[in-house]
Length: 408
Image 1 (cartoon, rainbow, N blue to C red):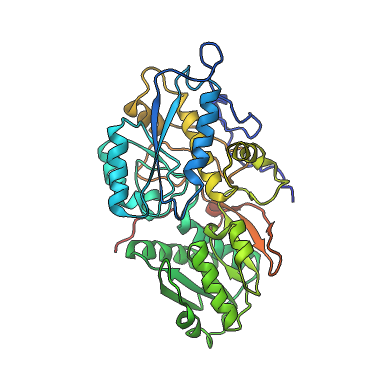
Image 2 (cartoon, rainbow, N blue to C red):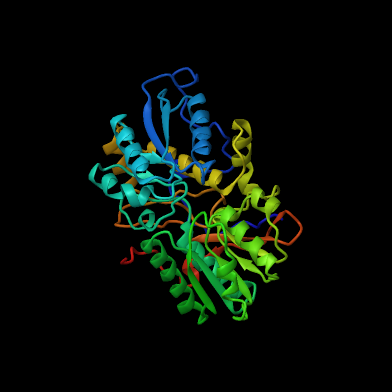
């Protein structure tokens, strides 16, 4: 399904700050003779929890490789140093120390379960910014030195519930939330409250005891057998949601399911065993729609570098593109201080060629959530294929309030 142009996107005043979906995958400043960049490297770092976010940093690397092949920044290549924190706090902290020791000027394309929670204080103290490809925990959206290109799970909760109740007409929604840490749960509840305030709806049931990697959900589902749930809403990573819904199917449920972008993958569609519809608020334009023009360049770049087409790959790609656009505004020395200053001095947003419902900007401020938009997609039972639904859901038009760092 082709999407119509979104004319409400904020215009960009400076042509150098446009991420054009038609600009070609190797756009960049040529070296002295138009050759691949071979000058002094510009070191950039990326942290991922690769077991959960496999494609984020490889997608960013693909962008940087093509930029380097086209000459880099006046002949200077981007040296992208990547670190797998293995979803371990100590590993994440070590990755930041190692990146700083290598004189990284920024973090780009980070896709980690916990790096914002672990490292946000260090980033502020060391005056280095992070352009997250997949911001996950609340600190990714409440820290002055972080600006994700994605919406994050807290906006995802609001968007999923709002689209479910308002667009798809679902009632008596029973919610299930992964409760790995109190701060995250409180941020989920903030999003639920924003949905309640905006719509007048309430969850018919709320279970905040799910854990990442949980194997058995029989007890969670048995507890709602008599609740009259009209739909399920589930917060969890893809494999966990697959297991949850397999147990739901085993217990005879086939009601519609609302969940988050983390399940929006072909692997999920191929492995799911459930007799009901699944609806997801995609954080970016639907990668599964081959006719969507906004993803044409992204798809070509991912194909040339063997990176799987997923939402995480979209996030890494957009983060790297945004970094390059900011980098090219720097006059004088390129270093950590000048890049941080350039990012925080932004006043005009970068348009994403339709890959997001809102343009991206870093800019000044104590917190950043530039992207609060979602594109609904649908997985019908037995099809194994995601369908693009649309249109763009713009959170700020529907009562969304940016994530704040809750107590707890």
